Length: 385
Image (cartoon, rainbow, N blue to C red; front, side, top):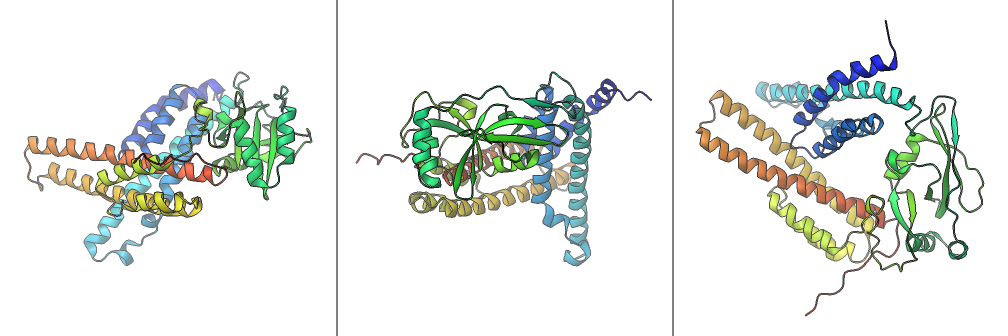
């Protein structure tokens, strides 16, 4: 049997577009559907490694979000026979989606493995091969003096934020040979240069950007995990040093926009519009208290709690809409076609509003994570009387 890369690719490509569409349809209305849109774009661009990363992460998040339901025992947790049947049906549907995720990931792993062996793809070289980096841009003497004179993590972060735009290294595209990074570790900021990658060991090697001293290689997954926690940040130099109060949002994809009080107001308005979050007013309280006095961890914890509450309510709403659709199709729900169409339009508009609010929640939480590791966020000017 011919198992050449071309054959593997052809076989995998044949069914994947349809399976990605099935995943998209299965998750329509959930907070994870946006990620699948990005996965489809990456797949159309033939970036199978990035597609695999997105789909795998989305599947894990979907599984975790419904883990409690999957662990239910229909006989023990069902109030009666009908309730137990509902639990069983819901578990079957969830498991079917998870099985679909597993199948897509399996196919993408084949494609990513083939792509990683292609020399024109710079993400991973062939096994046993390592690639040396070109020289990284030199750090200026002025920056070195300021950074080395700074005492403690907060002061070091302030210097880094003055001189560089930052981007969490949480995706493959932000891991580039020769690039500069900052790493928070044990109360200190370490400046690193991405020096070498080894596909055989699946590790990334860094060296000190100040001294050139090689550091212990890190597993690829660990590097992305550090980036997701905003501990490993990619650094892109600004045209000139900025003060800590200046907004560093002019560098496109490589810039993390710092949130402000207006971001919370925007989130509160979107959350109230969903009609699913009765305590949406708490967002304004968090803005005026925890965020204002820079208690970012406490603000994050409270915002995350509201996010989970809204996401749970959104999942319950989606289940209700599906039940209504089944009832309408079976004739149990008496509505004229015109009334049903009007209802669907209202439901679609509300779904879009919910997804918008969930995106705002994600933006706020990402910003709060970054503020925990970045000094002196820009402050809002007091409104004129």
